Amino acid sequence: MSRRVDLVVVGAGVVGLATARALHARRPEASLLVLEAEGAVGRHQTGHNSGVVHAGLYYEPGSLKARLCRAGRAALLELCAARDVPHEVCGKLVVACDDVEHARLDALEARGRANGLVGLERLDARQLGEREPHVRGVAALFVPETGIVDFGAVARALADELRTAGVEVRTDAALLGLAGADGAAGTRPGPLRLATTAGEIEAGFVVACAGLQADRVARGLGADPGATIVPFRGEYKRLVPARRGLVRRHLIYPVPDPAYPFLGVHFTRTVGGEVEIGPDAVLALSRHGYRKGDVDREDVLEMLKSGGVRRMLLQRWRRGLSELLRARSRGLSLAAMRRLVPELRDGDVEPARCGVRAQAVRPDGTLIDDFHMVRGPRSLHVLNAPSPAATASLAIGGHVAEQALDDIPPN
Image (cartoon, rainbow, N blue to C red; front, side, top):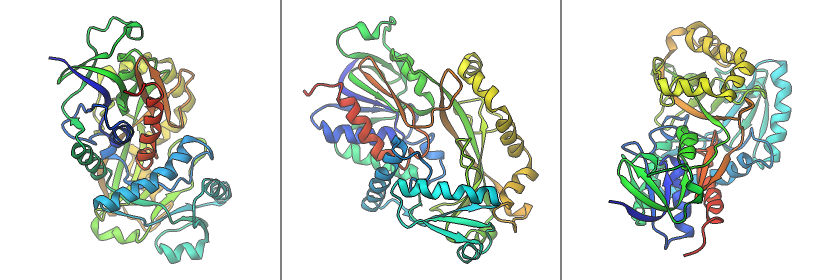
């Protein structure tokens, strides 16, 4: 039996839940339903990320990433304090290990100041050692506003808040597409008829925050995503308990390569007291490929058929091969870690968890770097929400809600 809902949000990661929160705040009179394919909220990118609350250091000034990260960070910390979600603003050190990286610190610091970061401080090798005695580098940039949190707990807090406000967050409810879709969704009057594993739903408007399935959900609802989602698996390691003292106070990051959209191998303290190292970033053969041997035939065939993905692989095969070799070689992996913490020994590190990141790739093979949305028939789709999306989630939710409500007349 079908039911009628004014607004449907697809996806109950932190971005989807934050979007639902913002929609409800702006249209409390509208009926609102959140659909989540998994059995609980925050099961994919939200529950498998590094747990870092980013300050906004890396992003192009004026970009959505830069603006929403700063606003989202403040809102996130306020939410955590109000809902007793464990978090800590511990700061991070971006460490230059050679002269080339040292020169890059100038541009990084200038970008951070342009983005409004407060308290940035340049450190020489002696000052770096005073903060983190086991970390070595020729210089560092101290970023005091960086923090850590359990984003899975953030998602659960948002879901509880929505349910308390009367919004249904329905788990085990996967979107299958348009019910009776004939390929002309944009020409049919009236609501979208959604086929889900929980029954048919008539939706006045759909906002899709589907992460690793974002392009498929967009196509299924009659929108052109203009990109293909490519999964990258991030493989983490961690310090054994007896050696967690090698990273005492802060998060430790290398100076990033500006030609590559990942931040390199870094040391991240967690709210649970662990010190994680990573991630290596390797192409995954499954959109939910959290283990090295996971292969999904449909996902692989879709990547091979995509001209954009093939072009990306041709353009970036050297860096991709380097990441793969490091992920598969304990020696290479340890060498990358020891650039920052030379005292590390082989027995100090053990395998930890994995996460899968969704990266949107354009038909020309370029990676979409900023947050990116596309409109469809009575729908809006978040196609790309890379890091710092978790940090920025509350601000992203507000931004997405405003964009969606531009298309929805008041009741």
